[in-house]
Image 1 (cartoon, rainbow, N blue to C red):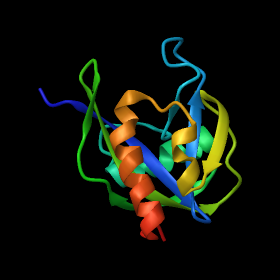
Image 2 (tube, rainbow, N blue to C red; image 1 turned 45 degrees about the horizontal axis):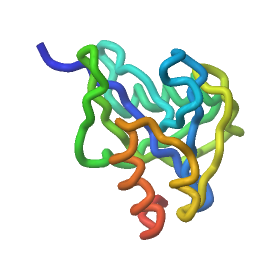
Image 3 (cartoon, helix red, strand yellow; image 1 turned 90 degrees about the vertical axis):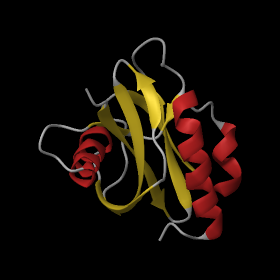
Image 4 (tube, one colour; image 1 turned 60 degrees about the horizontal axis):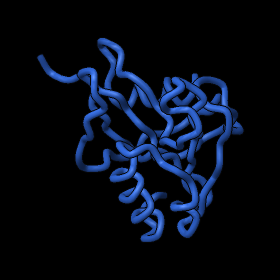
Length: 134
């Protein structure tokens, strides 16, 4: 049986990347991640990303491209990360997060990222520094 996909969003705005601090479950609380969630049956990854970022952050976004690779999350789930651009709205921590931070290229390492997010965050930061996020 194939792993279920969790989509993560490397959300860019004004040369910064969004980091979201988990509030639950307890073993992840206080660590930082790229926001997102599970792909629902019949959804494309892009549709899932737009829905999840709307639900979790209250914003409208445009998926751009998938960051190469996927990372095991355990319990039959795998993380795939897509770059995305903020279209409208102000990010707010509506679900699963208690703090959000926009990080410039030199601030990416200032938060304690979840281990499975680190490879995608490194690539998202590289793209940010190279100006490939617009």
